[in-house]
Length: 299
Image 1 (tube, rainbow, N blue to C red):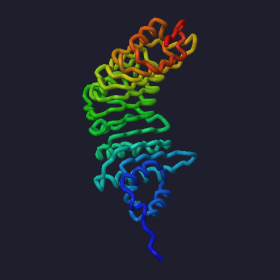
Image 2: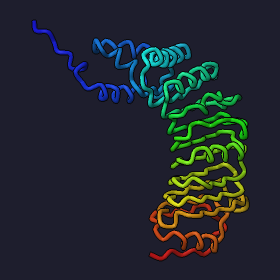
Image 3: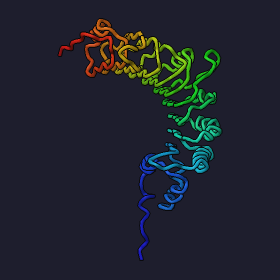
Image 4: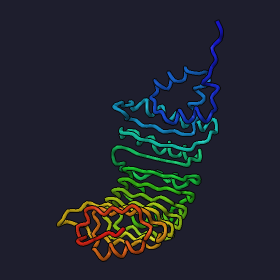
């Protein structure tokens, strides 16, 4: 009987890593997948994209299995001095928090370029300060935690950051400004349901292209960005209850294509002033802007 070829092992490494990047398996399923090929276990433990979801498609990964899978994967990378591109955690057990500081420290040692921390409940403590030493970090996405540090003494070294997304995150205005000052290469800045800030003033981000400020209860949004392409503002609003917010867009006069204003306290004249400044807008969506009374659009 002829020996069957191991076609899986013959696939290019980057293709196998891409296949594994699209999977989120628990410990038992990982063990089964490693039986597919004699080299499959090596490919699994060496993949540059470590993405772990504890709860997905009506399937819950027990805490012990989840912690073991994440911990072993990171330590394997450390032992083999492997490259790490993505480290993304989504979890629901609060007990995972006790391991988080160690995992972030290991990911930073591996020069992670994309880091995402997404618990289902608010973390009571701030993230470890080692996160600010992630010199290779390009994308940072945080949910339901405190992004707090001493704005005058903390050394922020992730100066290569290009995308920052904060969702239900507590951060002060001074701390946000500190990040902006130290990360001039940011192209995408997204703020969702953030607390601790009452204003969002963006100056100095000359590469900023996409800005979202949603449901942060801001009193003013001022942005100066010469290459701004998309600006999205969302706030809860009712006919008799509109949160007053000053909105000023300075720059992006020839590049702004998408403008979405939901629940903005903007008047007809203010809207006309904005619209006249940006002749290249192709997507315009004002919604629940109850102070708008007589706006006409000309093609």
